[in-house]
Amino acid sequence: MKELQDRILKDGVAMNEDILKVDSFINHQVDPELMLHIGQEFAAHFKDQGITKIATIESSGIAPALMTAQCMGLPLIILKKQPSKVLNDNLYQTEVTSFTKGTSYELTLSSKFISENDHVLIIDDFLANGEAATGAMRLLRKAHATIAGIGILIEKSFQPGHEKLISQGLDVYSLARIGHMEAGRIEFIE
Ligand code: 5GP
Image 1 (tube, rainbow, N blue to C red):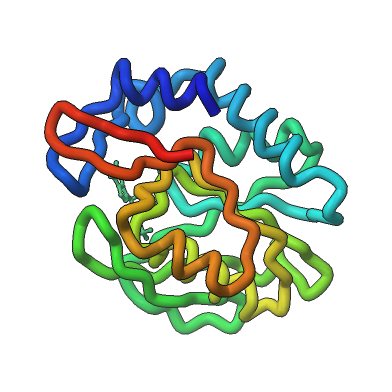
Image 2: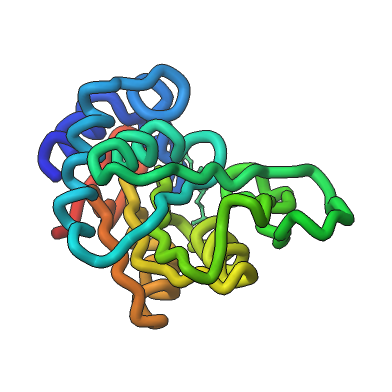
């Protein structure tokens, strides 16, 4: 998606070879117009697939996931990050390791909002090692929901997440794919 790539080149900051900062337009200050166009792009790609719900992981995925949900006329489920395990029959939980923080959290979903009849599209801001997306799928599958695909704003294609998800036969649609990055330089691949 050219609009997102251009914005990354203009306002994204490659901190080093691994971490891209996008806090001026995606995850701290948010550009609603860009998020709307992202929602429209995902809605067009994933249309007519019997999707019943959009899911994202708090908090950076919420803005683009909400716009996608709005464009598709579907509810949005926010998978919550809890610091520790909660013993409660009405909750699904699974442990995920954070790429940016190196710590773990319990991804949590109330059984009220998911069932075996749901076919879910997962939206997230970044794809790096694929831990967040894999954790989200594990959680949704605990409720016997099925996964329609994964929509990613920025994929760092030089990290293993993309390969990990593709090799499971999943539809991974990334709007900007970074092939190489270093401080002050970002290169995209198609
Ligand atoms: P993964 O689980 O695929 O390793 O990492 C994805 C999660 O880590 C995303 O939800 C995102 O919040 C965070 N993340 C991964 N790489 C970056 C990055 O380069 N910049 C920022 N801001 N967040 C990242």
